[in-house]
Structures are given as structure tokens and as C-alpha cells.
Length: 415
Image 1 (cartoon, one colour):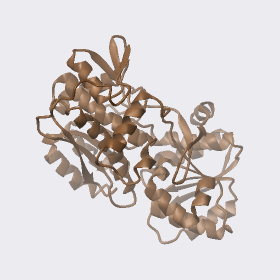
Image 2 (cartoon, helix red, strand yellow):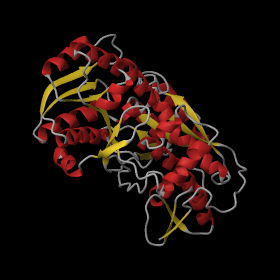
Image 3 (spheres, one colour):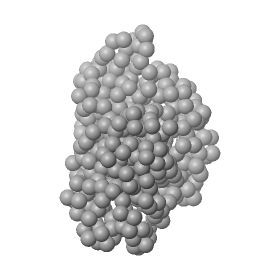
Image 4 (cartoon, one colour):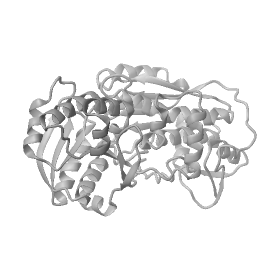
């Protein structure tokens, strides 16, 4: 294998886009409790589109990031899905749906036959066979297993499990509980939170009276802020060490919870379990970082997304879609979708590329390419899923990796 395009400028001469604009639609919540999912999808879409368009577009077509607000509601998402399918002729890819609305919209989106990059970690998709569905981040349950392993590794034996009701928590919650028990831990409180309530005093009392050493937690931003504000007050200003999911790395969640309990408490007592991202020195990440800041379109607080696994995966997805068009000489999703898996997989006789420009140039010369982007080697399996290691990441305005979660303990917790 030969590697080219390690730096953003390592490309052939830019070609000029002449065709119609093709859209990448972020079909996720932009309002409601999970509104932060919208910026999460766009944070990867904008730099990908910038990189493709700067190199002349895919098959002479410029790309654009557009949005469809599902509101995080399975009922409200249905008309949004119908509208998307009805106007799908210029749609190249879908980023979403999220776990909130994927089950209700799946039958509709399947009709469109468009590459769909899920933001849904539900176990129903662990072994899915729809050729148009792709999930480039690990399943929800893996985050719960990581919580259990991290807690065990740090000597905790008593945990409270506090999870919001709804599909987003159906993987994390049971996995953390079962995993912690498998590692010899005890769940001293198992509490469900109904999102959007004005108070969680009853649930907070359950946790406080159980005296946990650590809390496993996931809930939307507003629910989390209310819960931890009351926990902080009822527990004499003390919040036990708390392990949260990747959702808690979003700026809206951080702002809400830090406003409720103070930034110092958030930074000291909280850690998020998220798919481990590769070193910032790898060529694919360097190219992504350049595009993230060079793109004229950016999400707010863009710096908080530089190592977000969803951001990196959506950037990579956008590049893969564009390269698939080039390789198949087609902008028809039913045609170019088949090329995505091969483009993500290194192999004999393939040129490894790290930018869209380098990939397009190599394809134009008749070469087979493998794109290794911001996420590193994705290792996509036959069910269009990825596995991967997990890391504990600090919470706050300047998150950083604390350490990798023990793979050995994760395997034991998941057994």
C-alpha cells in the first residue's frame, strides 16, 4: 500500500464543479431535549463538504449540508421523514436518525435507498442487514460496559444507576448495570428519570439514601441540570463521582449542568465514556482539523468537537460518500453506496489516502484507494458497524482524555 495526501495541501490541481448541488441531510433533533444532536451532525458535515467542494466537488457536483428537524420525537419525525423521501432526488446521504426517532422512521427512510449514517446506538442495529445503513460509532451498550469497567478499575463497589426513560438509554443502562454486577459490583439504586419534569426530589432522595460511591448516568441536558442541582443541594454540596455517556460532552449539556452545580464540580467529579479517537497527529485527523476551521460554515463552540467521535465519523462519512461517487462514476445512491465499504478498507494494491482531494486524484488515474480519515481505520464489519476502544474523557469547557478504559475488564463485563 502507498500512502498519499497526508496533508490538506497534498493533492492534484483542483477541478471545477459544474453539476447541480447534492445535499447531505442531517436528519436528527435540532429542537427538544436532544437538540444538541443537530450541531453534532453538522460539526462533521461542514468540514467534509468544505474539503470536497474545495477540490472541485464529487463528480463535478458541489455538496451542501442541509437539515431536517426530527425534534427527537418519533411522531413528529414521521412527516419530516416523508418530506425527505419525497424530495430525495438531490440527496446524497443522510446523517441520522438518532435513537429518538430511528424506529418510527426506518420504514420510510428505507424506501429512499440513500446511504444513511445512523446516530442510533440501539442494539437492534448491531446485526442489521440493510445495505444502506451505516453506523460508524460503537453501539450504546458499549458505553454502559465502559462505565462498569472504569468503575471496577477505580475500586468502586457500590453504584447508583440513573438513566432517563426513552430509547437513548435502553442500551447504556442495562449494560452498565449488568456489566458492573458481572465484575462483582453492587447496584445500590436503580433510578429512572422521566425527562422534562420540574423536580426529581424523590429520585434524588433514593440516590442519596443509597450512599453510592459512583453514579452511572445519562439524560438530556435540562433533565440532568435539574437532577444534579437537587442532588447537590440535598447531599450538602457533594456530587459523587459520576460517569456519563458521550452525549454529556455536547456544549449544551455542559453549559446546563455546570450552571446547576458549578464548573469546578463538573470538572472534578464527572467523566464521560466515549469511543476512543486516534491521536491528533494522524494525517486524517490533521486534514479534518484544517477543514473544520477553514470551512466558512461552523457550528457554535466548534473547538469542543475536535475529538468528538461522532464529529469525526460524520466527516469521514461525507468524504467516503464523495469518493464513492467518483469511483463508480455515478451520483445515484443505489450505485455508489456499494463502493463505501471497499473505500474504507485498506488492502493489497490499494493506495491509502487521507484527504478527499488525494483520493479523487488517485481514482482519476485509475487507482484503487482506501480512505483512512479522522477516525483512523474504521474496520467496518459486514453489518456496517464498528467496534473500537473506549476512553474516559474529562467534562468541562476544555475536555481531555483521562485514560483508556481497560479492554480486558470491558470484555469481562460484556461476557
